Length: 297
Ligand code: NAD
Image 1 (cartoon, rainbow, N blue to C red):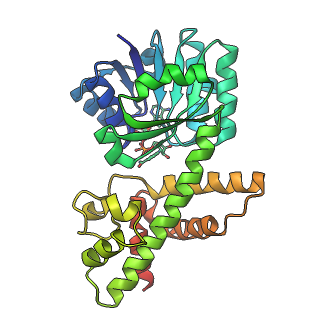
Image 2: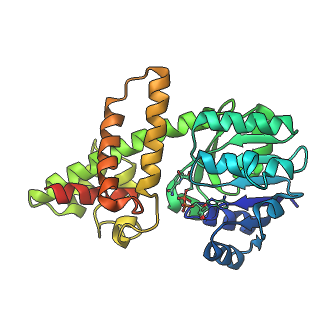
Image 3: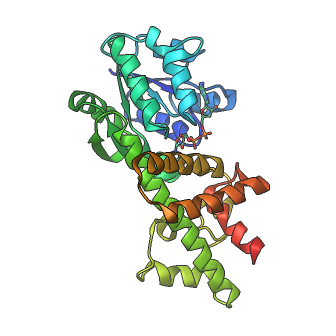
């Protein structure tokens, strides 16, 4: 049986680890939060006392952490760096969204110790994590992709090989920049319709079936009460935090700057999320941008 260490059991990592356990993998889970560990235990994971304890002897280590500094600290330069404790030939799969340079540097540090590392950021949100239908966007060698695929298939539906180390992260920030633009546009259009007397559910259905249809309208409607399972109908709790979208848009701006790619729409979306965050909304789901429009109206 493949043993998987899973580090980072938050909104995404928790349900991903649960799906691995359900698929029959031996999952050793670790998070800094005791509450997250309790939930993982209830869902069939073994609970480890530290990340290093979870990773020792594991075939695969999966990390799902907030940002690049956490990933580097976990594998390379933290107090108990996992690359010093993992088996040679084991594979680390980092599913966090981080900057491509950090992903490449951590991969190079692993290679020096005989340990593989791929960047494998995900798309599909908490709903996709729970349903096991995530999209994985992998950066690494062909051989590492082949080693990662059977594990990722237990948590996702579409597994893409984007290219070499870091390519998964570049593709991911392109996607999230587009998502931020779509979400901002969707909030803007719904707000205008509601201010002109339309029912938000009726307007959403019209746009969904028309040329304005997009992912936010299909599965993540930002207006409270329109979609029962969306974060908007749950006080904008759970889901994908504004802080994390703000981080991803910063990563997108870095990629744009370094490659000289013009991103006027992405820059505008970043400004909107930045203002929304500055008003104290960092820990809410990113569809709460709807409130920004309502407040401004
Ligand atoms: P989250 O804040 O809910 O979870 C992060 C978890 O990591 C927390 O439980 C925290 O306690 C834990 N953690 C932090 N440092 C740790 C350490 N050193 N050791 C062990 N555990 C540690 O975040 P999330 O929403 O699950 O997102 C995780 C990553 O996935 C981010 O990079 C995010 O950008 C990306 N992502 C999120 C979504 C989404 O919809 N939430 C979608 C796609 C990608």
